[in-house]
Image (cartoon, helix red, strand yellow):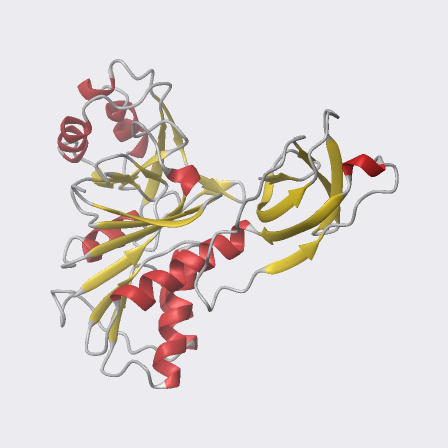
Length: 321
């Protein structure tokens, strides 16, 4: 994993290397990644490691690292190669894989919203444009996704005319071991749930940082509410019995110093927890029972497959497997 000067992850390194055995403590090599200097500390033992295979369409950048002049000669490196994979490329990899593996001609496809789902839409557009996919129609989950799909010439329909979908592909903010999800930090949770609950197969695409042991611990759990008396609704959210042991707090979502408005002209209250939600099924029921709540970001028992990218490449998690 590579960090930039501010401590944020700027990419992952997948590498292969070999070198002579030595009794020294370590040797340091450096490479340039996105204009910054990063270092690898190689342990003093004979070893070899192969780079993880990615799909053919996934283009990586191969860097050959040169030994720094001050490294002792008895630490001679015989071969050092590195593939530097940015987080954006990892998103692209899972987005493309979801379409390549699960979409076929003649399908009705739900198009998710977000930085990872963006690449699934892109891949679908490429395959329609090339003629590889025919008779495809799609249902977008936000105006942003709708606009992207139109630029690719993807035929769009609605749930009113196509109430059942073959597949939906989307990202997620959190994924637990049962493939339950937190979604909606991008603001499209209502349309996402309306579309994806009608899909025969829901494929989730994420990086491994989204995998959690319990829902609600990495950031906001969004709740879409009516603008009318939203403060009253927010107070009720803090009183939900299922959240009693979670140390919950709430904040109205804002954008550019004003209240954020969804595509459906509603507001979003973001809930934050100090501990995971112990009973997500109970929480989901109690949230939707609050008058003024339109929808919440708990997507339970909906996902069938989760495609995960990370430091060791791409893996697929299937429900109940």
